[in-house]
Length: 360
Image 1 (cartoon, rainbow, N blue to C red):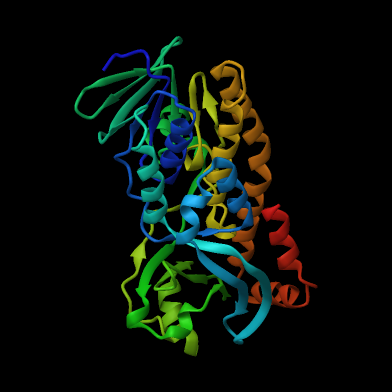
Image 2: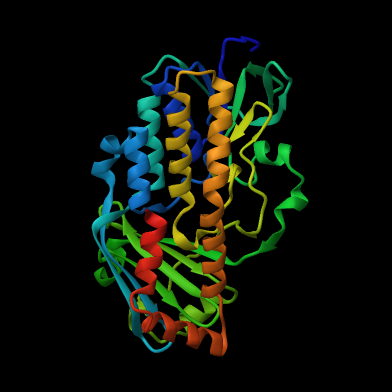
């Protein structure tokens, strides 16, 4: 399809791709959206206050608000001595949201617009040809546009076409996920809270979603499943006999890249971020809000996109660094882990102040 009237090709069928397509649909941009890559829609995301701000700026909050699961507080506990270390009251201004629901709500709005052509094909090659961009799909078709928006994640074709894989500095990380149904488990697990249990070199996060009918569990750390089963803790023992799914995730100390020529990126394709501060989706939403802000300005599209890339490159560094640091703190072992927990316990609401700073 060599129709040169398309302004954007969007690559990526996950949350970032849907956000990009939603923004372009609002601005009446003529777009081809390759939405076949939607393997990242299992489970749920946390929606902290900074996500709400971004979703409101993008204009999709009203469509999503009835699906948000409100959270009352965030609880940090010492798994070894069964003691609360910190409780952050978020006063139901913090939410969780099912990934599939988020994607479906956005897509249902997108398909109402005639300016978005949705194609369910896998992109295998992209290129910036100077005055235009092109991509080629797995069935050999070629598509042309003025710009490409890459929203296909850390391992997607966009990012990996632009940088050397060695620049990602990857280390393996042990992460497991399970989703529980309320009808099959003790209801004490489904209270409206984000729960973080810290232990010796491993930790668990769990929280309800989908009107508190489902529970999202994440285990992080080598031997964490075995450690959980041997924990002897009543509350955690309620979630023993379940099927864990290994998440393909790397401990990424990586290069951030927002553009190369006329190819621009958002979400994990631009800035893969460690999950320890629940900022992966939040920063994707923020990408979207800044992208919309710049594309809405009355000057040429290339300059608008370049401003988006410049602004986000400056903003993202601090969040990435804090997420990486937090992961290292969570993974401490032995005496270092015990000192960590004592500091959190006596830290004069340190955790709360830390999180409020991120949510601003």
